[in-house]
Length: 584
Image (cartoon, rainbow, N blue to C red; front, side, top):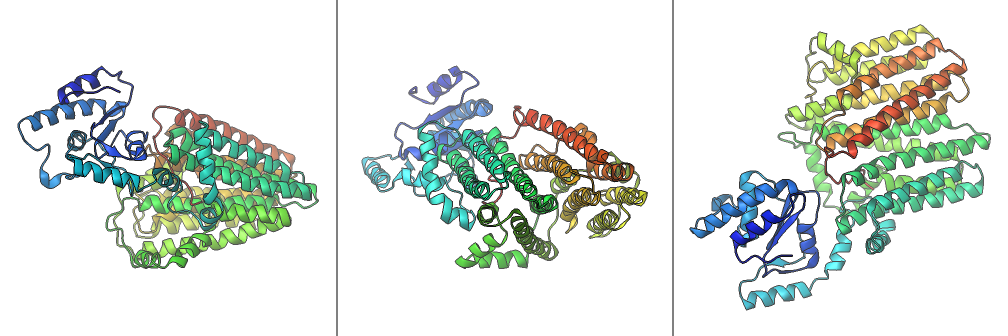
């Protein structure tokens, strides 16, 4: 820590700091909570941040900081305001760090101003103000505030009342022992994998142990995010690990239950894959709708107004959070049913619960979309196109086909294509080349669906329909093949493809767009993979070669996607975000 005698001296000291380091300016008169300074000066997600009396800049904002410091010093020296008083975002902060923050924003650098709530951050100018600030600091326990803020503001009922009351203290325990959120995330994954192994034993003792360990894994899953918020250890790698490990844990546990059931003489692989497909499609509905309306103009509707009104009635908030079966309620249900019943009952409960939740959320989104008068932006249309995951075949059709007119044309054509593909897989003779013909029709209709920008009121339905067509087709053809181990191989294939789709979502949320085009082409897009599985089913009818082909395809997809995904998320171009992920 260095002390500057004036703004010019501060600029010289800052210029001498190595370029790759974060710097901060703090008014020597600052009075406040330590956690207020921590929020303002140590959060790694923002290039610059400020609280009254303090300012920080990461390396990418250092140049702008020096320019703002020189400009502020010059303005103050002649008695001129740094910016127009009418546009000043923080007129109450007249300190040097505060004025520099305003100058930074005037230059175009985003400056984060964290909400302090009851925390104090002040720069008193006389003994009376200093005494008042000191009294305000003494009246608030900043450690209690820090613990409360470690918990997400909007969690599910089970997480809020059954996990967070004690998991926040586990997070503090971890912070005091210098454990990182990534280490806790990894521990959660390992615990869930052990739980899956226990379930795979097929014994009652194994099921009981699996249920207990799954709950322990969920506690750790909550703890890693709370630790990140408590200690402000946000990282790109942490956001990616937390999001992807959640899917890996759930899918591995489904597989463990299916293996255990087979050992007990009950083959439930179709139910396990069905539960995974339903859960993935539910998530795509959420992602697609949110991206379509992320920056929509005139984003209001009577349905949204009713929802806001219900938020004022406490019990309805919890009821609506529970009915969507978030990860906390879902894992609690899985854990209890695993310990007390059989894998078949677990999957029946999952399918029923997730189906009801999907109907509730999708109906609400449909009503909002139909009653909202909003204009979709080019960014939203591009996000939906990226989520659609159209490969070379669909892109070729879209390039030569005229854009279909009509508000609901794109989702209607996508729905028709989905019905043709899934209907062909279900009802045409297994192994028939008519199923391949249905796949060809699906390719054409997929291309027509994305031939124009997806800006219609219901165009957000296009990606979920494509996911349903691909996943369900793989499930149905594997189940109808009567080939040993075909459904477990299909489980692996859908898991690998679903990872690719989740990875696409996380990249879009981070503001970096979809995966590179070479990856989309290599993966052949949703329509290419669907057609390929249909061809394999026709060529390798009722032979073990179908299982081998699905396994090889799953391994190939997983290798390509994982290598590119890991390369991206550990690179410097990855977005520095902390994604809160699914409602817990």
